[in-house]
Image (tube, helix red, strand yellow):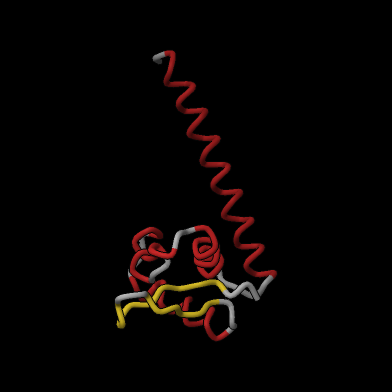
Length: 102
């Protein structure tokens, strides 16, 4: 085998293990707070992203899912009082999402 290929394989395996550990942690934290994993992912993005990136369509694209896959969890987060819609200046039809901090 090529000298770098073994290192590449080890790095890929380490990244895969880290990703799995993060997924397990996310699932556990979500359950602990009565949320689904995608709801936690959405909340994390709302807290960490600038306003222009806090729209359902943008979130769906970034999470590599369809709009309804984000819309339904966002609706549940609204009902729980964790997310609210904020009007976008200059665009009466558009709304961005904001985490309430509750």
